[in-house]
Image (cartoon, rainbow, N blue to C red; front, side, top):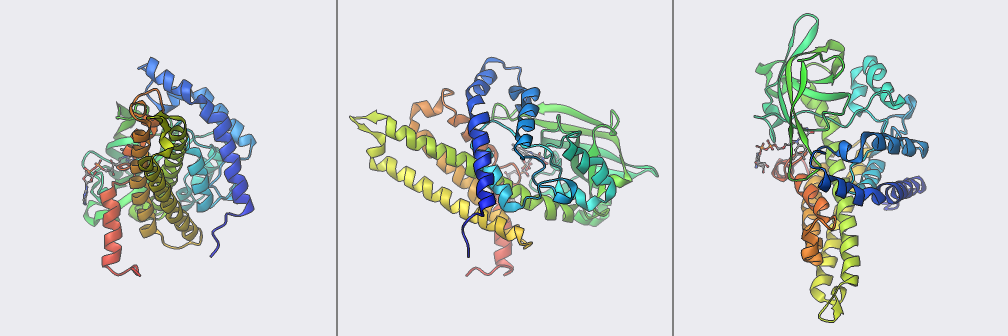
Length: 399
Ligand SMILES: Cc1cc2nc3c(=O)[nH]c(=O)nc-3n(C[C@H](O)[C@H](O)[C@H](O)COP(=O)(O)OP(=O)(O)OC[C@H]3O[C@@H](n4cnc5c(N)ncnc54)[C@H](O)[C@@H]3O)c2cc1C
């Protein structure tokens, strides 16, 4: 067993950390202020400014932070799951929403040369932008993705998509998205197919962002999409027709859960650091808070919580890099990370007192995002369901 990161992984961590410290954290106050002053600004891109967003991506590119997850043979950096976790954890130490550019979903490699030429390579060149959009949820299908009702019917030339997707992130900005639809209702989840929907060719009214849905987290606006006779060519099927559920499980589910793990680790780690600094600087009854046992215990419990999540997350990433099936472990990571971050950030707010509840500090940003993540990407109950099913079916040795 080796618990050390490699030298390259440490260099990557330090580089991303420096980028976050020098380029993103200094923008935080302005970001908060803009949101407060201009109620019309609704999306994360709009708050940072699209120009600023792409300029930062360019700066990161010059540091080698580009197309991180795509294989080297296509011009990507070919990073694995451990690196994915390292980058996500560092990047989420700020609440400013940012992602490194040049990436496309791995799952496109299942789709043949067309996917590589039309989507993967243009993303690496910077001609197309993919913002991680997987449009699965529908008004009648959330936690249960097999219940989706959006249909795809072959008309002899194209697949014609009809239906509504809801609570979708970043759909306004992405050039293309991944979207599952029912191609054969009689086959249940084996009748679901995964498509790449290209916003350029999905002619209007074929594809429309019909509504922006504001959430409790000021700057996290979600979208409702309406597909109205939306044409998608045959070559935009990812994997085989009817295998969308399987393909999504294999390529999107584990990565998504690890993303959540890294996200919650980064956010919680920053909040713990803030709480510890504040406890040292704030005096009540003639002593710094940091000298009170009840505050020390909150800090100790938080540090332990963070540490546990970090190790199950990195262990899961390590197994995933070895090609092992980590559907169970990734559910544990998401569940533990979601519960840990919310507990930890709540304690940080408590240590700050009233100040922690105001918009004068940024704890509320982390707090609200941590709350959102307990439902996004699969609610905690579903993670428990996955874990329990695995243990009860004796797929996984408990001891
Ligand atoms: C911030 C955010 C971003 C999102 N981004 C996307 C996106 O980009 N793409 C996308 O497709 N979706 C996205 N979603 C939607 C998200 O995936 C769904 O909200 C989630 O899967 C739950 O679906 P639901 O909200 O319809 O809850 P429902 O399915 O209606 O469930 C409601 C609640 O019931 C409980 N529950 C449900 N089933 C069970 C069960 N079997 N056992 C026990 N309890 C159960 C859970 O507590 C759940 O929270 C996003 C959601 C949020 C909050």
